[in-house]
Amino acid sequence: MRTRAALITAGVLIMGYATVGSLTDPDLDPAGVLLFAVAVLVGHDVLWMAAVLATGAGITRLVPRQHRPAVRVASISAAAITFVAFPLVVGDGRPADNPSALPLPYGRNLIFVLLVVSGVTLLTCLRRARRRRPTADRKKSERPAGSGPRTAGR
Image (cartoon, rainbow, N blue to C red; front, side):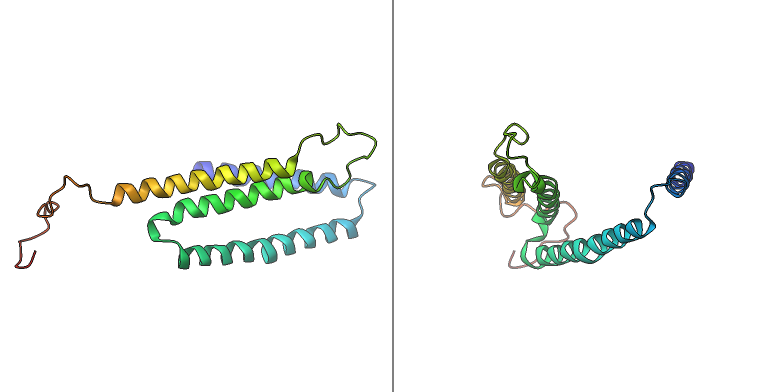
């Protein structure tokens, strides 16, 4: 509990410092700051959270329970990687006279990284499915300890 209180106190102090610093800045444009804050709130709370919730609902409906954690991690990771890499892929603002500004094939590399994320997810799901399958050398008559008395037909 002390750690939480210390983190909250540190966060409040840092936000207070930032607020005082921005309010004493002579070049501050309050309308621009307000517009930015509204854009961030709309972008995060309306667009991003709606997409995350819809994706989570789709995963819940379409993916078996044992694979859901891996698929959720992969989808959030892929979204974050794509979000960070998108400006480089698009190359907006790349100077035409400086080919070394963004020299790599970012689109191809993004596809490669997303394929790696997908492959790791697939291997994780296959490993979990394999672990849950009964092995061939286990007898059908074996039951877990404490499973109760044997009944007719088992």
